[in-house]
Image (cartoon, rainbow, N blue to C red; front, top):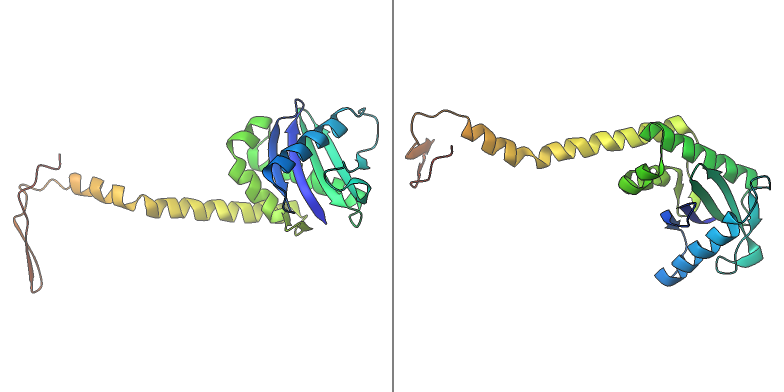
Length: 193
């Protein structure tokens, strides 16, 4: 099971942290610092697996990471997870981010944190891997983006209605509105324009 997914830059600044077990906020920050110190001091030519830090569970857990440009992608997992499977999952995650953001960089993770979390949620939920097919992940993320845009359209409807009324070019403001049996007297209102 995946215990946590951490992304931080070369200076140890967290850019994403997702914990699948409950820890206090202070403990989470200590885990991030400890993980950064364990991973960042390693040479580039050594393997990408190491024993977990004391805060994340010690020798029962592993840290599996990849270093891309200025970012470390670290998955904290228990002993039941395959190291090579998690390395492949990190690769799929990074490639998916790259496709969604067109050449992803650290700033994308900062300014689009909600979208990054959505992509991650398509891949991992509750510490279990859901999807590793990049095309399927991108399809689901695109569908979610379309739905968000359509909901934004609904939210913008009142503003569009006011704009339409302002542009109606009525010769004068109606004083009475009759709809079937209902008659509505319109009070004196200031001009729309």
